[in-house]
Amino acid sequence: MECTVRWVRDGGMTLMAETGSGHVLMIDGAPDGGGRNLAPRPMETVLAGTGGCTAYDVVTILKRGRHDVRGCSVKLQAERATTDPKVFTRIHMHFIISGMQLNADAVARAVALSHEKYCSATAMLAKTAEITVSHEIVAA
Image (tube, rainbow, N blue to C red; front, top):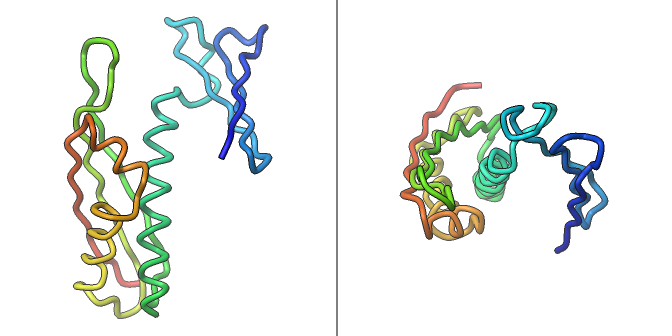
């Protein structure tokens, strides 16, 4: 896996990341740090990537179990250290899973498996952050 991140010279603190799969992601800073507030902050992209990684796991696990999952969202709330490096110190992930006649145990198991075994982003962030999870099931 690879990624190239380039500073957009005339863009304040705007950065353009081009992934190995050929996709582009813009990143920017807050105005008080020289940015123009045109894109997510770098640490917001880390948090979003973690949410994407774990949601991907949960949906895959449920689909492989032949559960009729119709939706999955993850709301992440994070706290960061107050001193540099301002790593994440706490992250709570709340999953909202929708589907038809979803088995509550299967959903709980999918969330736990992602959190405890499969999500590489969660595993990395767990080195500095206390990570907690919760979930709810909504009928589709």
